[in-house]
Image (cartoon, rainbow over all chains, first blue to last red; front, side, top):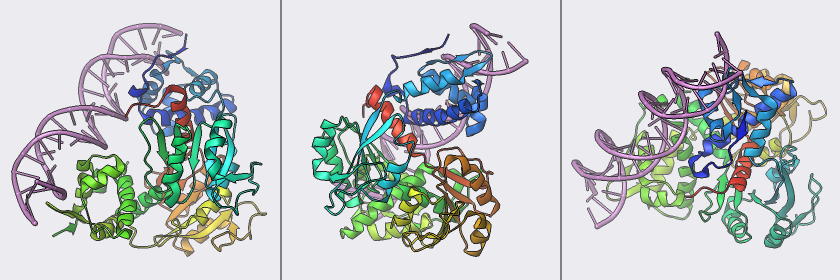
Length: 220
Length: 220
DNA sequence: GCCTGTGAACTCGTTCACAGCC
DNA sequence: GGCTGTGAACGAGTTCACAGGC
């Protein structure tokens, strides 16, 4: 019998594990859509060039999902992964900085899928305020952040402003009570320890490729 | 006297180090624009919540850039970092899949800055072919990838197609001779070991935030 | 037979602590 | 005094190897 553990310690689980769970979920959803009912850690591992033991360990933090000699039931696994990742309920998010990236996110169907809902697109530029966005929202004044966050039960703040205003927006997000922030501006923004900030800097990825183009691609 | 080492072994350097060099560079460029001439590993460390020894180690793979008792010369450091990362020459890239994300990248000024130049925006959809993009290019037929890559000396391929066509495009990029690929489609694409693929899956970041919203933000 | 779950071994990455130099 | 560069110590993360169960 498989069971989801509820008494794990968040501090003992690495962000790397969480990231992999998210990737496993993507794969499991495809398997499900293909009608595949069972999958082993070895089969999963092959798809990701990972070690099967690592996958089993990643799952083991949260429970015993598998059946020895058989593997994991795909449908069950999907449900466990979604529950672990907190995708079994809706998370509302607000985007500050309505540029092309914000528009891309607004259009990104999975982004606005069952688990995530964009409930605000804000900008400080008066020329943008009032504009209609692809997801049917209207651009609102970034000055109304605090009010919007509390009135609309926003949980996640997304920063897509230029680097120069990112820290200011981050501070305002913290002040408005947001505990998780996704930052796309290419600066290191600072926040209290009680707030989780994840930065995604596209330049870092490109520059990494440039490095390997220059010095050669490492073996294996 | 400081000197850039040229005989380092790429295999002995972790991708984590490369990613940090890219982040240091961002910071160093800001310091330079502020007119600051010298910086110590400790000052840098404070900005990133990193350990100063780690920064010194990251640099040490590539040479001895610092002066004991003083620190690093900002201007020199910038130049070394750019050379290490291969940013002292232009890298041409082609984007396949002209959706909102591609448009955002095309507009992302830093993306098309000195070191990176977008020389093609391709799509398989005939309705998009011929459209003008924000960076002054015309959308071209994805079927012409091979030809475009060789004629325009493209080094980096960027995949911004839906998940369903990402693997096909990746295969074509490999066949056309590209050795480095940046994949934004939310699938794990496979390529030979001689090709470097970096995947950026925005969902992973969001789902990570959802996890911490559900289970609490870890200490420190 | 096959596959999971997990302690033990190992590898890789980070931090410490100090010699060497300004 | 200060700060770099680096071996040594430490810790996090991954892989091995096997007991337990289908």
